Length: 429
Image (cartoon, rainbow, N blue to C red):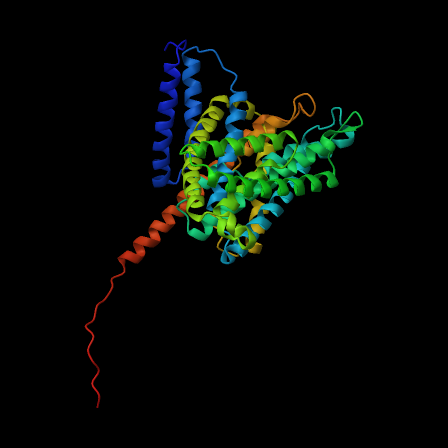
């Protein structure tokens, strides 16, 4: 192919999207997550590029851009599905509690494991434990990018639990990560003005910005008559997210709050705010945004995981120390998850127990650990790769088992004959 023209790139991108759609259909029938198939596709493309002697590209900037936009779209897509009804208050709070406790426990235990096996001293000997926490946090965050498209065939209550839990895990994990980054002292100075008080202040400020901007966006966009306003709305959200991120705010929280406001407009625009809401136009915005978000998330997620597959270096796993540390971390993930689910949900915890993949957030946050400031040479990226692939394969196995179990139960019910009797009026003696 002549890569001096744009056509080969258009052909490759088009084929990848078509194959991604087919992977989605395969996933529905086999319960193998489409994301895992996309990573395999990326690995295949890498092998093809190597066999053709093509020069290697630096995909890292593209991966970061796709990951950030994909994260925004995925969280927005999930938020648009969340209906804040009284009947769902308990499931939402339960998922929030499990996500928070699971994140903190997993990060704590994983940090202890990493600190024991890896030298985090470097130039930060007084903060080696903090460094271990920073590296452990990405490993402890659930991937909504993998979970949400993979649980569509589960029972409604289980599907909703995974949507709530993975979304909360993403947001809380990112907040924890940047809180820890803010605690790092470099040459006696504190980065990002961190600390507990700074964290509380930025969280409250983020919530205020999120609520005010959500009301203003809904109010203003109701007045716009142009038929192309939905991508304008996406641009505004991306702008707010990026500016908030530059100011070290919990910008993903803004996306979540906006999604919740527009998905539950009658709840948020009650009382004195009711006069601000044009129900017909607002619902048009909601449905249009829902479609665009879903389509955009599909495209971005496709290219992110394919490019991630291209960038995988399997040689990083080829180490007994990497394999050993990764297996211990995997055991911790599922032991903690089992204890939490068993204590809160009860005995019906399959396949929820095994649906705990790591993915997009793990990759993005790992790349955000500054090479100059906090790079730890003893930590191998193979640990992340092993855990991402391992948790994805475990989830795949559990979903396939669950599908077979459900099909077996359906066949058993269908095999039971249903008798039929003719009803007669009883005789009165």
